Length: 377
Image 1 (cartoon, rainbow, N blue to C red):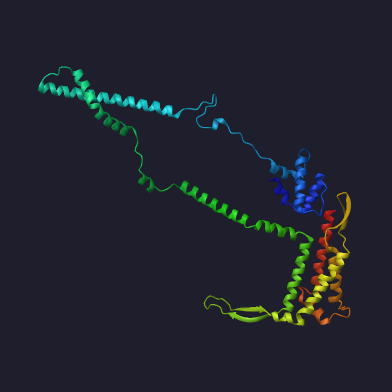
Image 2 (cartoon, one colour):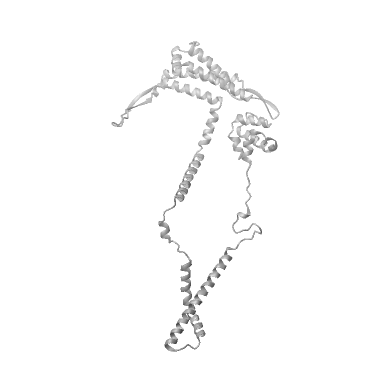
């Protein structure tokens, strides 16, 4: 359906398509509502919008070709008067002709046989009084026995032999049959795998992950996840447990097994760096970004102007505040009288590339926020 093409588009793309078509959409509406409204609008203005190249995939899906079946393709029907040819009648005429030939051959054989019998009788017992009557009686008495033999002999001469079921099973298949069977089985396997892939929900999950990663929120979450992993490697060390010996003769090395020391969760070595990173990278930047939200704008709903924020926490303000705190706390050592310098150094050394790696992540998120805002405008 044509709606599936709209469902595959991003929400911002749908809003841009609506603007191109002349339909005003509410950006805070759900994606399904935007798709339904745009689909209804495109159906109502098909004459005008079908000429636009942007909507060509939408209308191309809705066109369904119609193929007219020709009456000449039907077996047994003529192109002029449409009369059906009677196969049974043709076969009946052929059977009648064969029957006449059989009767003629049988009658001729009987007359020849009767002639030979009369000659033999006249040589031994004298002439026959009425050859015609005798031949007639002979035909009458022997017609029931001669006709089957003549029929079987004629059919044996004219009908070719058909291979028996046992012989047909012994014959090997042709290469074309083997190739067709292999192609059919391959298509069936591909169709089963395709159905299994579609039912598993993997395509929908991949599309959802792609939509999330293609936004400022996805980029921000990726950098926060990298920082959290780096910090956990520092505050929760891995302890040696045992080793798996390799198999001699196969060149397999010995594998050492480690496990995380969860007892560190009960000490200040875990909580102090974790709380400091949470404050400088999450809590304080989120608090400032909530109040200094540059994504708030007025939207007309039901005839009234309402202030709506695109993001609850402004990503631009969030990354600016996070970059300033990272530079002051980890770069300049400003502790505001409550931050232990050793804790700040521990958290800074845990990050990939130190506090400079955190600053690079903030710069990337700022650029992504500005780029998305420029796309919307």
